[in-house]
Image (cartoon, rainbow over all chains, first blue to last red; front, side, top):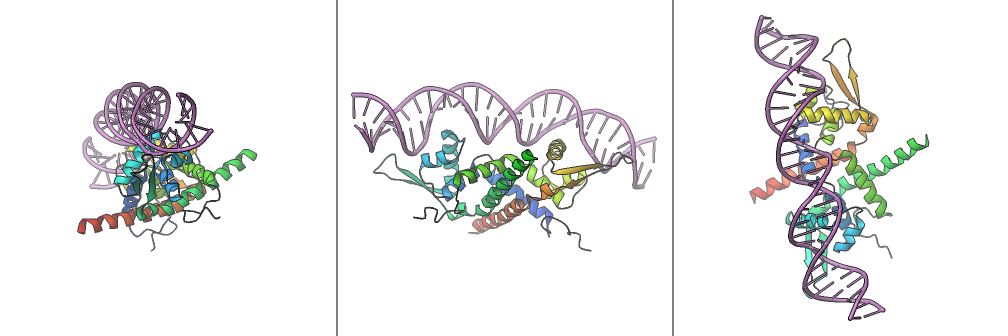
Length: 122
Length: 122
DNA sequence: GTAACCAGTATAACGCATGATACCAGGTAT
DNA sequence: ATACCTGGTATCATGCGTTATACTGGTTAC
C-alpha cells in the first residue's frame, strides 16, 4: 500500500526532509537575511542603496548581516581603494541559489495580501 | 532601457515584492512553524506523532504553536469527546498553500548538505 | 496494580536577535 | 565653509522566542 499518498511531497524519507528543512531555516533564519539577499540579487550594490530598499532595517543590522554573509560566501565586498567611501557588494552564485525560496515566498506574500483584502471587503 | 535585466525576479515593483517577502517572513518566522506545517501536511495527525516527527521540538513549543495555528486557520483540532486522550489535527487548504515554500526549502537544504559533504572531501 | 502512553499545562529562566541612539572620518556639492 | 552624503562603528537596552523541568488526569497494556 502506498502510505505516502495525499501528502505534501510524497516523501521517500520524511526524516531526511525535516532535516533539510531545519537546515534551511537555520541558514536563512531571522528577519533580514532573505530581504538582503533579494535586494542584492536585484542589482542593488551600494550600502545605502540596499539599506533604502529594505523597509525597517537599521544600519547596524545591515552592517552585521553583510559581514556575516561575506564570511559565509554569499556576497563579495568590493572596496575601491581610490575612493574610500565607495564600496560595492555583489551576489555570488551561492547567493543566487536562494532564488526559488525567495520567489515562492514573494508569491505567497502577494496572495496572502490579496486574501486579507478580500476578507475586509466581505 | 530595461533596468531590470540580470535580476532575481525581473520585478516590476521591487517595493511590493520586498513587502510581500517581509509579510511571509513574519507569518512563518521562527524555528517551528514550517516543520509543523510540513509534518501535518505529510499526514501526521496525533500530537505525539507530530512531536516525534520534528527533531528537537519541545512539547511546550508544539502546544503553543498548534494553538496559534488553529487560531489562524492553519489547522483544525478534532477532539473526540468519547476518548479524552484522542485528539487529531488536520491541515486546512490555507495550510497547504505553504507547500511551494516548504518544497523549495527542502530542496535547498538537501543540496546544501551535499555541497558541504563535497567540501569536506576536497 | 502498576507501568507506560496520551495530550497537554505551569512556572521559571535565559540568551540572542533586534532596536535606539549617537558618533565618526572622509568625500562632495554649492 | 558648511551642509549633506557615504559606509560604517560603539554602547546600551529590551523583548520575546525558546528552553528546562516538573506535574497531571485519564487510558490502555501486561
